Image (cartoon, rainbow, N blue to C red; front, side):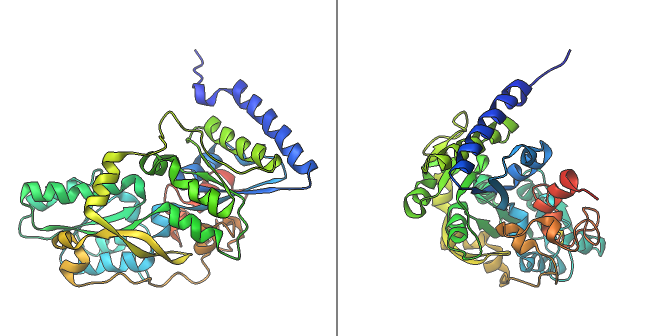
Amino acid sequence: MKYIDGFRDPAAASAFRAKLEEHGKELSDAGRSVCILEVCGSHTMAIARFGIRSLLPDCVDLVSGPGCPVCVTPPGYIDAAIELAGRGVIIATFGDMLNVPGSDSSLAEARADGARIEVCYSPLRAVELALENPDSEVVFLAIGFETTIAPVISIVKQAAASYAANVSLLTAFKLVPPALDALLTDPDLAIDAFLCPAHVSAIIGSNAYEPVVKEYGKTCIVAGFEPLDIMMGIDRIVELAAAGKVACENQYSRVVTPEGNPIALQLMNDLLEPEDAYWRGVGVIPASGLKLKHAYAPYDAQVKFGISVEPGKEHPGCLCGSVIKGSHKPDQCSFFGKACTPDAPVGPCMVSAEGTCAAYYKYLRTT
Ligand code: SF4
C-alpha cells in the first residue's frame, strides 16, 4: 500500500504550487521580485532534497543563510580544541565537528595522530566521560544555536550534581536574531524576507522576529521542515510581497509558540550572558554569542585552561564565508565538486549535514 505523509501529499503540493505561481505572477506583473533568505541549514537541506527551488517563479530568488552551526564556527575554534587535545584533554563532541577544517588540521586528523576525541550522541555523555576518567579533563565542544544551547549547558548542572569537577565547555554559542540584523545591514546583500528556522523558533518564539519587521520592514515567516511547510512559508512571503505588505507570522504553530520555550530560556538566562561573537564569513556581530557567567567559570574551558579562541585561517579560495551570507551559491566556488567534496571537504559548508555546499553537492549538482 502506498503511504503518503500528510506533509508530503502530492495533491496539496500541486495546490500550493498553483497558489505560488498565481502570487508570483501578481508580483511579477507589479514589476517586482523578492529575495528570500532561508536562515536554517535544515531548511537548506530540505529545499534541495525536495527540489523546491525548481517550483519557484522566476521573480523569487531563494538564497541560503548562516543557519548551520558548524559552518559559522571559525577555524580558530577547531585550533583551540586541537590545542587542548594536545595537552591531553579528552575532547567530547558531536560527530559533525570531526571533519571541520581548522587553520591547519581537523579533529579527525588530531584523533588519527593519537588525540582522544570522543563522539557523543548526548551532551551528558561528557559528564559520564568525566566520571569514568577522574584523572583526566574532559572538554565538550559547545557550539550551536538556541536550539541546542539549553541541553548543552545542562552539562554544568549535571556536573555539579555529580561532583564532576573535571568537565568544562569550550563555548561558541550563536544567536539567530543578531545575525539577521547583521545580514540586513550588509551593503552586499539585498534580502527582502526571511524564512525563519523551525527548531530555533521553538526555543525563542516567533515574537523574537518582530523587531526585524518593525525596524527593517522585512517579512519573517516561521516555517517547519516538511516540504509543504516550506512551500506554505514561501508562498505566504510571495503573497505579502505582491500585496506590498510585510509581516511576522508563524506558519509552524503546531510546534512554535509566540513566546518560545520558557524552561530553556530560563536555563540559558541563569547560566549564560551575551558576548560579541565571531561568525565565519560575517565577522564579529555584537552580542550574538553567549558565554558562561562568571559564577560558572570553573566550567569554562577558556578560563580553566587559559586559552582564547581566535578567528583562525580560512582556506584561500574557499567561498564558505560568502555562501554563509547568501551572497554566493556553492557552484560559484571553483573548488565545488572538484577539489572540494564531502569525502575531501575544503570548507565547513561541505562537511556539515546542514551545510549549503553539501546540500548542493548531494541534490543539485549537474556535473
Ligand atoms: Fe568552501 Fe568547498 Fe563550499 Fe567552495 S565548495 S565554498 S571550498 S565548502
